[in-house]
Length: 367
Image (cartoon, rainbow, N blue to C red):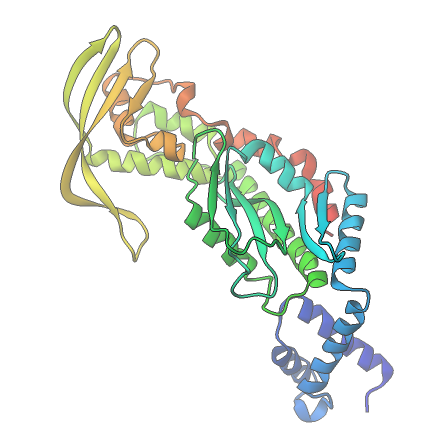
């Protein structure tokens, strides 16, 4: 009933939308609507499903593993920084495969001080086991540092590896959930090997574009100051938008902070006692809110070098200067920020310099 041209057009639209994750019923409804109703579209949902299944079976003739290996080979040919490695079992069947694209390798060089390794993503929901290595980039976004597929490590739980000691906002559960939620948009329960790598590349291209947009926003927009503290202006000039907002949260909380004691502990070193509210996370707004309870913190301050250390350890755990040190700096009229409070990974200049040399090549390999 269809002309060959019409049938070919339907097939192209079918595979295009199916590859994008649109369900067969939705595709059928859209195609029928373009022809003013189902009565004018003599192709059923079942027929569309059969066409898709037939195409899958044709692709599977060569074998899922061979198709995936061929795809990785093409990517490594296009980009020499793309790395992949696989192992076979005694029966010459695929045991596991690991790959790291050029962008992930560059990201690991800069953001690999803390890595969260998760091997639980696909064990319960999908046919394949997908393990990923996750870090945090200069915008505080979860960034993929590497992947492994079909590993025989079903008993392994989530693991956080601390390489250089600092953890720049890395919470394993939070980051794993964030990355898994991201991949949920591209992977389905029926995803096969030859489909997986293509969907993975689409996901990574989307991730690269998100980071590129965040870089552009940091370069284009400047958040207004919320205080007259000189050191806030320092962070405004040098940090990415996302990280400067986190610093500003500490300046806002500074309204609840006061100095209640001070003593000399060494030459040029003072120890301040800081009173602060106890803060809790509101489950509805997901923001920190102060309670009526109070507690004290100790801050050691070197008046000669402008170094400072707080027992709250916010700087060590999240890479953000804490409000307790801020109030001590304000007390001592400190206008310059010591290098110990400036992380290179949060710098807006870091956005422009790092990964820019690999971005074009990486996007080419994705496509």
